[in-house]
Amino acid sequence: MTQQLPKILSVTTLAKTRIFEVQGVDLQFSNGELRTYERLTPQRRSSVMVLPLHQDNLILIREYAVASERYELTFPKGIVDVGEAPIESANRELQEEIGFGAKRLTPLRPLYSSPSHMYGLMHLFIAEDLYPSQLEGDEPEPLEIVYYPLNKIEELLGDPNFAESRNLSALFLLREFLNAK
Image (cartoon, rainbow, N blue to C red):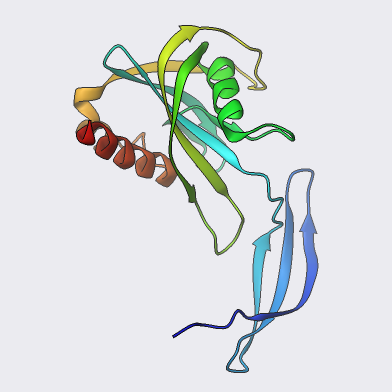
């Protein structure tokens, strides 16, 4: 059965900040049902997350996350700049956040973090053949770089400080990638 997309009846701005805009989207479904959904404005700019591999280690960063109000263990990531390809953005983010560039970037896959409420397309890459290279980033404080042994991926999956869903998805995909080698 092919479902018919709901008809968008109207889109209104409910709230707006320096960074976010919340929209109310009035929809009519094919069966006549009417609903209003809320979403963050779809900026249609994607982001990248990079899993850097270096000497049998995974390189992560620890940075403050305002929503959880704590420091989170995560991978280098960021927004794809206008005019930049995701692979270029991935290499730039590596240099800004961990001080390495990559001679080889392998796309894992794109994923959405919360398609019911925002666009949120993120391109995942594995970075290998790293070389020292530092670019100035936009972080408010220096990031803590954490080397994690690749042979302890299972422990990382259970670490309560590594709890963000995109990170967990990326780590499962990395594990599959490494097992296929």
